Length: 121
Length: 106
Image (tube, one colour):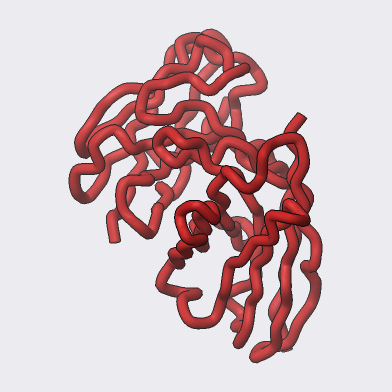
C-alpha cells in the first residue's frame, strides 16, 4: 500500500526558512516523478512544483510565485522527497501536500495528508 | 500560464441527480486534464485522469469527457458522499494549473 507522510511544517516568521519532508513507502520511489501542491486556508489547490526521476536527470519545475525561493529535491536511498522553502512570505501560508505522479497525464494519484506551514510575524 | 475555469463555482443538487461540471482551458491542452475531489480537511483524491480514464477504485458513476479546451465531469447519480468540492487540473504545460473548484451542495 502506498504511503506518503509529510513533516516539517510549522510556524515561521517572514523571511525565514523551512524544509518539508515527504517520507514514502509502498512503491518504487526512484522511478516515480513527484509533485508538491499547496492549499492556502479556505482556498483552492495550487501546484508548487515537481521533480522528475533520476533517469530523467531529477529535472525540477516550479510555479512562478515560488521560483528562486523553493527547491525540490529527492533522496532515492531514503525514498524521501523534500521541499526547501527560503525567503518565506505570508502568502506561502498553506497546507503542503506531496503527491506521486502517474505516468499517464501526469495525474497526482497518491497524496500525503499534508503539513501546515504558517508564515506570520 | 494556462488558466483553468470551472463552472459553476457552486451547484445545488439532490441525491440521485445527474450533474455535470465544466472545466475550460485558456488554450488547448489535448487530453491532459485530471479531476479531483476533496472532502473537508482531507487531501484531494484523483477521480479521472487523461480527461476520461477512471482512476482505480473510483465508482463508475463518475465519468469525464472532452479534449482541447472544454472538459466535463459527470456524476450520473449523486450519492450523499459526493457533496464536496471538485477541482480540474491541466498537466499539459508547466505550471500545472488547477481550476478554482466547484462545490456541490445539497
